[in-house]
Image 1 (tube, rainbow, N blue to C red):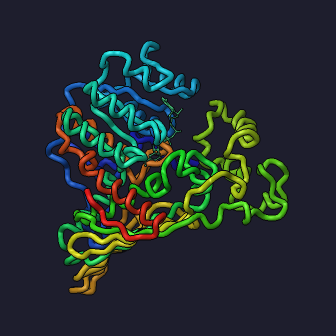
Image 2: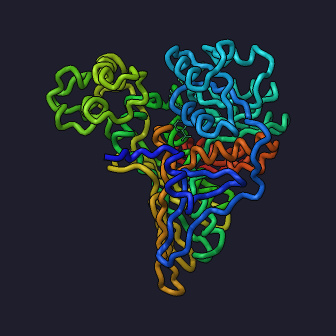
Image 3: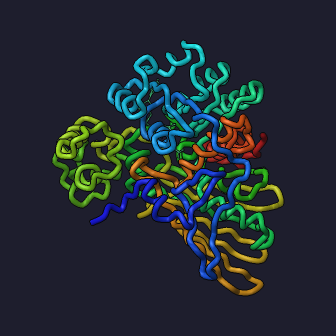
Length: 469
Ligand SMILES: NC(=O)c1ccc[n+]([C@@H]2O[C@H](COP(=O)([O-])OP(=O)(O)OC[C@H]3O[C@@H](n4cnc5c(N)ncnc54)[C@H](O)[C@@H]3O)[C@@H](O)[C@H]2O)c1
């Protein structure tokens, strides 16, 4: 059977006639099919994009999942980006990343701080370290004159976010925040249609982030983001994308926010009778538990990118079992030290009396996003694979289907094609020294972070918060 995982080059060959071009560079990973009336739905070329004179050089801080997503762009498009340095305390990740990008030994480091002990030796840094290690490297990078690709959240603290904004303004460097949904063709198109007035005046928005129940268990119950105190509250960790995309689609200032949410299910009192501290301990309900680590990681081989597995497939099963016996990923979801909300709702009042409601839901069978936009002359409904527009004036329904291909060979998730399109725009912004080529500059991104901080304060204090920039 042919593999469903197409390499970017193969996708390029197969769909060239419908693809999107950016300047003279072809981006194969996101395209729109034809709608029912046969009109092609292509994102326009950006006339400001140019082939760089030389590849942008970058150093990656954190060679984990995200560091690889962004770094892999350099493998596919070496004429645009070269990774010339890397830092990670995990020796296997460091070695694999260095080998993949042919990084010289003297440019491999075990800690991000070591990079900045050297005089500046690259154009830019990619900051893909854990949440609490964004601020210090970003401030250091800016003060040494590096441009930055900065993973979200900008920082877990509002003050630190504002400090980064201030230093960016002062130094005039480029800082792209990885609000990748802003670059997904689905959302780009949705925003464009909303702004074109196709549904009249926007009255309100309903937006839902369905996390998917095993993704919730993986990242926010067992995984790295299970403690809101050690990392960031789930709204910032997971849904800062969503408050950001709502705001970006509307293009309005937010004025007030009110939130509710709590951890209802993944708690000790809900542990089934016969369950054990680990799924590998002979749990009596393992075979029927949807959150069984044996089922998710060993039998289905889902989300195993978090393990540093041997390259030979035949050795991986045994290694996964060993991880399940020793790491947090094998622990019972009801017996963790987690505190992240598993459902969260926020209402936002925007300028112009537009209201938006947001729901983050752990208990869904699918991930992605679901959005409805209510306008005076029409209604839009979409799920990131497709959206439809109902025009009240003609009573006609138009459907648009996205045929986005995530670059799965290279990444664990592509955010609807947003991941690499962000990198493409960031490279343009760095090589042309022009932040206007980005839609997620720190200036543009900070408001949605402030919305998250205010929402959390509202949730905890049970009050409506005014959003002050
Ligand atoms: N934009 C998005 O949609 C998106 C998606 C997932 C994660 N993220 C964010 O990206 C960041 C990284 O997440 P991830 O999933 O890649 O995590 P990860 O754990 O896979 O990678 C982080 C890497 O940083 C390394 N690291 C830790 N301390 C370090 C140090 N002192 N110096 C250098 N490296 C160090 C770790 O060893 C690890 O390899 C997080 O802030 C996360 O919230 C963003």
